[in-house]
Image 1 (cartoon, rainbow, N blue to C red):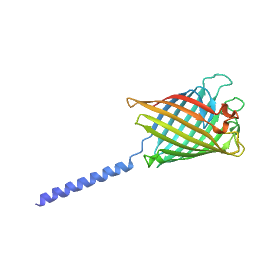
Image 2 (spheres, rainbow, N blue to C red):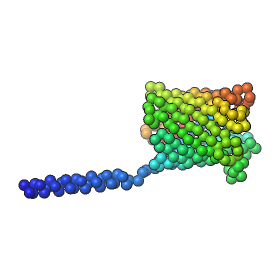
Image 3 (cartoon, rainbow, N blue to C red):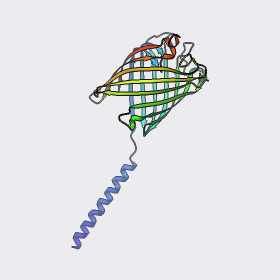
Image 4 (tube, helix red, strand yellow):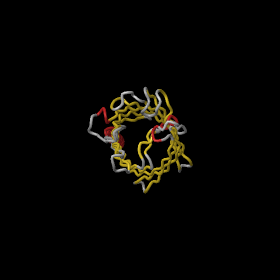
Length: 251
């Protein structure tokens, strides 16, 4: 009987030790980062309701770990001349529980038609802070995301703010319908819209579909109709309405 009790006690001790070791290994395991690479080809580049360029190639590279992320995004149109458009943006951010915080440095072709990345910061760059919340992280039937973005520093001193509400509705698990309403708040106008104060600058409706190629590559087809109500009748932003189609590849 003593031998049986000893064996049982030993088994319990070994099991407890193994369980404690496994739990400790789990808690001390380092989080793994994720490196992503993607590129889009779009029929025109429309940003927050304003058309900036024609047919464009837009690559992205990013790295995220434990909610923190850093990424680089660019856009280059197919006009290889002084009239062409280029952009390079760097973003750092953190997201958790549906909430997100980001800081983005934008640099794009300036009003003189030059892409001068290493020129004077206040002539060629824009520094923006963004806050967002995705309700879909908590409520599956409420796939709504909201965001607020404000330019803090750089080539604009009027602190223009862009507020967006986006909605995604899956249709039979095949195609996603995407809708967005965006509005700007500006002191003087001229950044998102020709108007000072509050203006609705982006009303878009579109669809997208993702094709998963053997779990290694995602191909996305998308099309959007985008309207900037504030630009109707003004000629602001190369016209008030656009139909944009695109294809994207991501790893």
